[in-house]
Image (cartoon, rainbow, N blue to C red):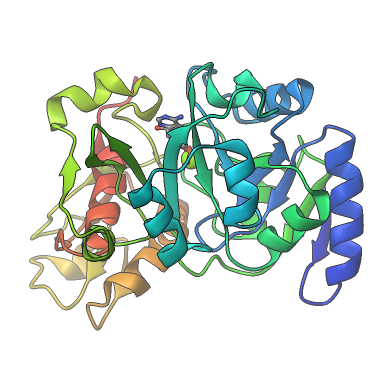
Length: 324
Ligand code: AMP
Ligand code: MG
């Protein structure tokens, strides 16, 4: 069973126990503003191997390395002007930059899946403080079994991985609720590798240039780790529902017209006021709750594709994708 430490009540104990655990090469459940991470020392191959094993994650899928600040990040990766501008504007925050790795950076190739680039993020709050105390980058994917719904609370982490890890730090619900936006500067162009908790329009405003989206068809080939089916609940998922039937739980956004709503197993409101940030923060928790209603299918009403809606719809399309 994993030990839980509340970081608001016992911040110093949390730092002390976490740094000792990480130094032993063990992964921990770590709260961040995006989702809970399964964090381990990015320079230690045994520790990174444990992340992949604990999650059942394919090893060709690189991990994001978390740093305490831009100065630390510059010790591990080479920043171009646009990437530095984005880092200065949005770190700490839900933005990951994919950058050339410095030779002899010390980040183990297992963390980057052998690539010559590294995905780097500076998380807000406690996670950043812990990294500062540990003074090494932490590789951290979301703290859930690979392919399943991401964890946004310590209890989610415990339910899924509690038997397989020794320590979970608890900071309550993640405030952003979806993973970071991943961006890469390539040949002077800004590419969006994954929509996430920082809206694309914000990035474009600071960079002064448009974000190029991946072509949908090539996405699966370029990044097999981000396979079509991901974020999958036990129930089937149906999108853009305008009606609901007796074996379905409905997750609503705003106040849509839904035919047959009285028949639904349950109805959950992601955001009754149509606030996309609130919807993102609720998304994974509500998917788990909808799953727990026992409905055969979770039906989602339409969610607009603007702002954080782009990240929400990306996750929902994967949740709805055919399973292997
Ligand atoms: P996750 O840890 O599940 O939030 O996913 C991390 C994602 O970051 C991976 O699936 C990759 O798509 C992306 N990523 C991490 N590092 C790199 C990199 N060096 N190059 C390209 N993509 C990366
Ligand atoms: Mg994940």
